[in-house]
Image 1 (tube, rainbow, N blue to C red):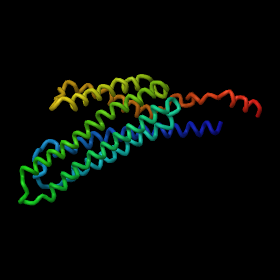
Image 2: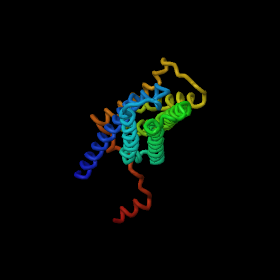
Image 3: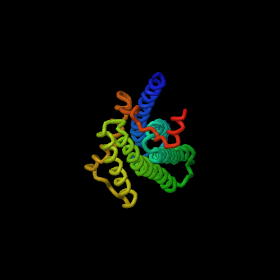
Image 4: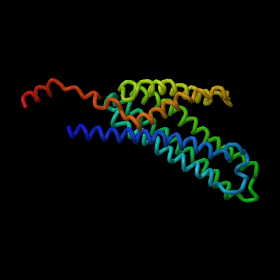
Length: 247
């Protein structure tokens, strides 16, 4: 009985930690995107002067984002592996890949800042602008690959595990099963169609995946896992049953 209570407390703490990590991913992702506005919207940003603190803060938030992304997978794995270990491992692997791509994406922005600070007055202005825009474009590509294509895929894996396990109400994983493919398709279109412009009216496609992660986070924080105690245990083999009987 005591062991069961300790397990319940552990899973409750895991649920809270997972929910908090999911919320951190949203705050840091949105915050980072907003802070990058000067570099994103100004083609001549590399030629400017002044503080780069806003961009550096955005980079810092994206590093926190990458760590939180891995944290969500590590926290969930011990719970969901009991339902399908292969899918759970796949989620950890893809979540780690997503974080790696995000981390790679901050390097071009750091390089942009370095060039902005060190470029001399005799530098080729045209070449600097071209390099600066290329570095921003490189960051944008990593955003499409990591939080776009990879995130869309790993969302489906975890939503499937949550739907199968009944750990949370089924309407929550359904949001993920809808939102993951939508995000994947939109980013695939942008990958293969040159200069693809997604109309503003298509903003609704991000709602399901946003709702999936936020509702999952809030449920885990305030309610926890619903049926951890009812999780399936490995079946005993005939030999094991005989040994238990003999004992």
